[in-house]
Length: 166
Image (cartoon, rainbow, N blue to C red; front, side, top):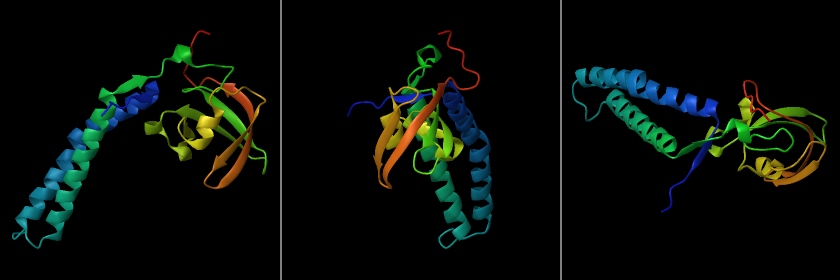
């Protein structure tokens, strides 16, 4: 099976590194303490606290492995490659929903960074994929599970803190 390459912004890379460190230290220590306390209750065969702590340990280890895999196969989006004239990975875009007139600003990120509630839109999502390569003023129609959506690109910019020298 071919390795999956994960495209991350520099901020996304730092967030994952911080989460990995937190899970390996603080979270692992908390789970270890929970397991120790649950064992102290005696018989672990019918001990729900022990089962929950064991599951928390497994969940933490799975997430640690997932983050390590992402980091090992990550490509950081080079700031110099972010366009100010076309929607691109790592760039910011301000859109207007042509149906209701609402405006939203999104940072276009790789799939592992997507967080729509934080304004991070994946380049692999229907809307993100439709926007890539488009310019300010263009209207984009997107077929989504919720139906057809229509957006006008109002502005394309660099995210705060990015200075690509272009």
